[in-house]
Amino acid sequence: MIRKKGDLVEHLDDYTHVCITANAFVKNNGELVMGRGFAKTATQLWPQVAREAGSRIRGGNMGVKFPYHLLLVEHDGIGIWLFQVKHHWREEASLELIAESAKRLGDYAARHSEQLFALPYPGIGNGRLAMHKVAPLIQDLPDNVHVWTFE
Image 1 (cartoon, rainbow, N blue to C red):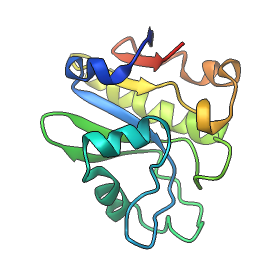
Image 2 (cartoon, one colour):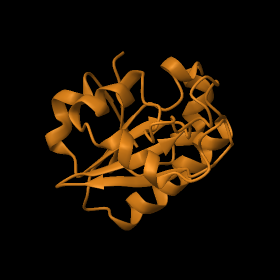
Image 3 (tube, rainbow, N blue to C red):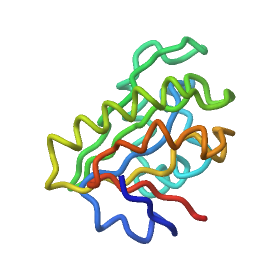
């Protein structure tokens, strides 16, 4: 893993894969809740992503806990991945979900070492976790995964 500081949006063209930290709550209109942080930005960049994600997540609405961990939702020259950090958008991020999502991302990225992956630092911000709690869970991601923070 390589830490990057700045605005990920300004560097999207550098990546073949972009991860969006997300939950598993699907609204009545079929869209995944993506109302804060980079998830919200992603809906502005790729308006179809919330609906595509919602249609791919089964059992995620009505607060049902549904772990999908890592899910490809769109590919149009760039792989857009949901990196699950929560079951429900109101919850604090889950260290267990982050650990499993990171494991799956790490495995995939290791098998595709020629490609670059961007990941907003998971679980902080609206996830309400401290970086020092999340750091051990993502420290072993391969170096083709860049973890972004504004700080």
